[in-house]
Image (cartoon, rainbow, N blue to C red; front, side, top):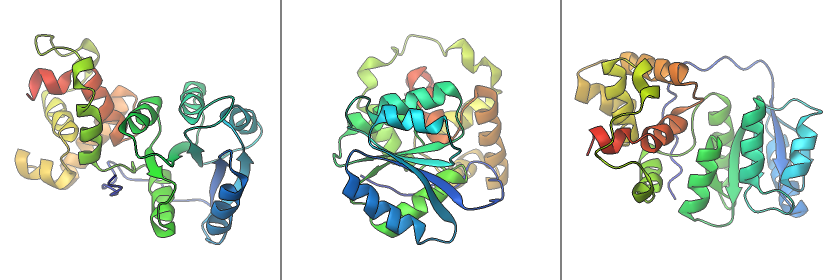
Length: 237
């Protein structure tokens, strides 16, 4: 699975301190390895660990974190369900899902639940560190093309082509609809700018406004919404 980091859709805030990280995995040895790698970085600090999703939810009531590294398959409560609960709570941390299994179903479920990224556990340390920094700054650690591949697999479950665009997208301007459609088709900001004869800065602004209007956290969530609402099938195919 590609793990290319796309450009940030909006200007990320300046960091104010080390990135506070919580490790959630039922394998203690794996948590130990991750902790050693992360704590060796001057801009990162592991502030908590949990062995399953329920323990993670309980832990998150007692501390503040910026990024959670969340395993998918765990006892009691799996990582997807735990991520969904964190999003419902409105918790601050962004979630990076980690799994041993390179299965599209896991990636789709994780992204739909609100995760900002999906990585395999054998990801090289430099890529893991880059991914953590990326999601902390507002990026999504899944290439647009990978997101499209994941969601295309579930196309039969989405609305038919005869259905109109959903009313929740009415808050977008015509130009924002165009930009969202192209984001969902796997285009980068540079590619969108070229196609629409806009500057990259203008496209970046449009993407930021789309996220704000639709109450989304990042580019991946915008792509998920575009496919779930049928925007791509209704207007782009």
